[in-house]
Amino acid sequence: MPANSLLAPIANTMPANSLLAPTANSMPRQLTHSLPTRVARPLIPTYAIDQFQRLDREREVVREVAQAGQQEIATGVEFLQQQAQLWLGRCWFCTQRGLEDQHDLYECRAQTQYGNESPKGWWLRVRRQIKYAAFGGCYGCGMPQSICSRFVNAGSQGHCTYRGLLLSGLAVMVYSEGSEVIKEAWARRLEGLGVSIGNESELVRYLGSRHDGETVKLVHEYIWVRRRWIEYGERS
Image (tube, rainbow, N blue to C red; front, side, top):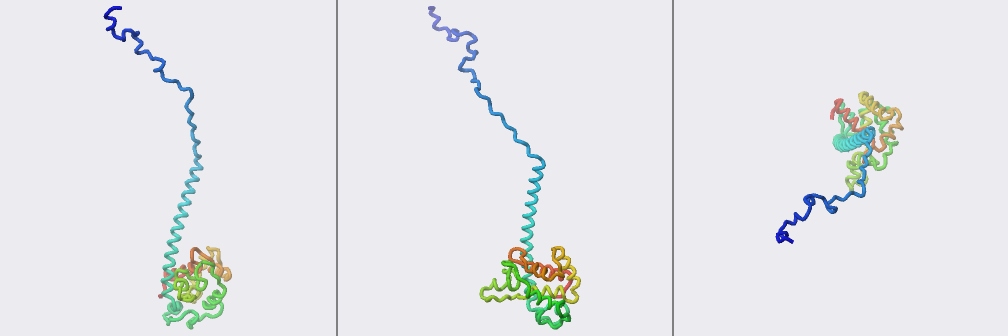
């Protein structure tokens, strides 16, 4: 073997193209299985999307109405308490006529109406008939429990500070002389609620029925009539 053959580059002992030729180990392995095929999700029909959006809007409206209702109740109870303190022991009928008013409807001598159609007659008759819904407020006066002294003051021994105020106030504001405009407006309101002002038994059931929370319908009707009179113009 020639002496210089030991010094010959090793590369020379390989074919020229062997460095570039891929070997079996350098070849990429072929996949023995195919990739899973992506399944396209079915498109949601447009009508279904519209229905979902409509339901979302309806739920939002319900939430807004509920929140507004709670605010209205809180505002109404506050107004009711103010009015109850204002008219406790005072005759609304006599106040409007500039007469001595330190008495209630039962003791009023200025009333010229008598019998069943008089405010006093309506009040006494309805007072005997009405039954307030359970948990709808005080079963003695109809006031919310948060206002009635029977519940607020444990030492009241069952006495209602505002006993008779709601019904007698409603009676005198609706059935007194000079109250025809308010009576007509209230009758239209009741008719819209499915109640006839001329059907006394129906009206009594309605006033005693539960409205929401700790209130009965009488509370809300009293508030409504009071606010109409304030708008209409009254003495206080």
